Image (cartoon, rainbow, N blue to C red; front, side):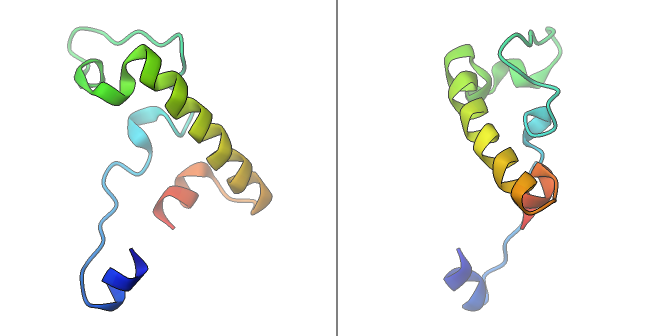
Length: 76
């Protein structure tokens, strides 16, 4: 992505907190209500959510090692 930015393309972080997955409000036991759009997003399906939470754990470890939040890692 960095080469694209250097070439003049713009980068915009969209939903950098992952709709609650980076800040810990979503876990494998989370059930979304009928009006919650996350219930229709494939990455929040139960099987995909478990895999994504494993990635979130890695982001948290990285954040902890740099004394920043996972959200700060996401937008950096």
